[in-house]
Structures are given as structure tokens and as C-alpha cells.
Amino acid sequence: MILMENFSELQLDILFKLWRNRCFRRNATLQVDNVVKGAPSHLIGKMREETEELIRKGIVIKIPHRHGDKVFINPEYKFDIERALKKFHPFL
Image 1 (cartoon, rainbow, N blue to C red):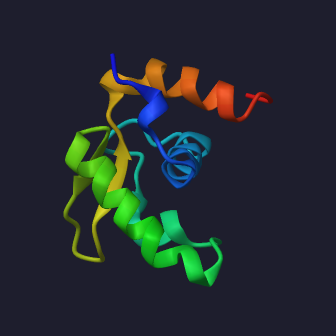
Image 2: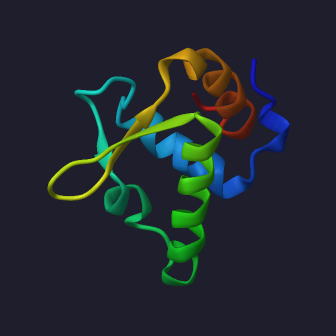
Image 3: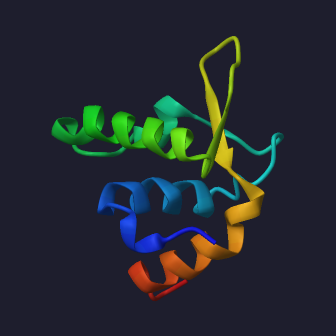
């Protein structure tokens, strides 16, 4: 079980975007560029750093691809992430 209290708001936003797009398997992925797309321009660099932090923690898995790295949620943490996202986004 991972401690969701340690997540920043930007990390929860990243996880929510992956959750919303159902990125739980190798075949269902988003490019890193698409994860940060739609964020305010002053936060894009920070969101890339936060994405790399989630990859280092093993919560998000990165797959190299010829058009850019793709990411998805580690299925082991699916229910823990769902619990944390429901606290942050009660409409889930």
C-alpha cells in the first residue's frame, strides 16, 4: 500500500488524467506530452518533473516508444490510487 498523503496536487492531477483515460495496461497508454497537455504553460515543466517522480516511485510505468515515451498506471496500485483520487475528486 502506498501513502497517498505524500502526493502533491500536480501528481494527483497527472494520475487523474491517466485514470480518466483508462491507462492501466501496456496497450492503454498516453504519451508524456499528452499527459501535460492542457496544463497552464507555467506548470508544464513542473508537471513533467512530477511525472518523472511518479515513474521513479514505480506508481507510473514508462514505455519507450519511437514517437516518445508512453506512460500508464501500475496496475498494482490501481485501487490505492482510486481511493486517493476519490478523496481529491469526490465525483468519482
